[in-house]
Length: 91
Image 1 (cartoon, rainbow, N blue to C red):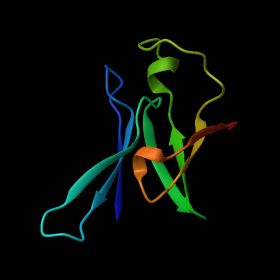
Image 2: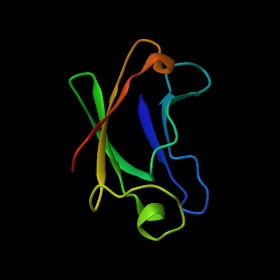
Image 3: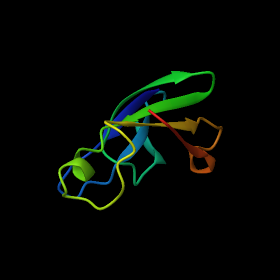
């Protein structure tokens, strides 16, 4: 399993995607979207801890309230990624 952290300040999707390489063809499954420019993360204890850069909010290109220089989100890895729960954490 690979995780891709997709971000684009000018209107990106803020997506975390699971890339499963076990089959003949890789499959892509969205774990979360609508995040504030996710740039990296780590898997620990069945969770993906995602770092959101918030560059779009900080630069004024996206609406929203800044909670600090970055934000952390915890996303539960489940059997079915569509059922993953997203929670916010303070930086």
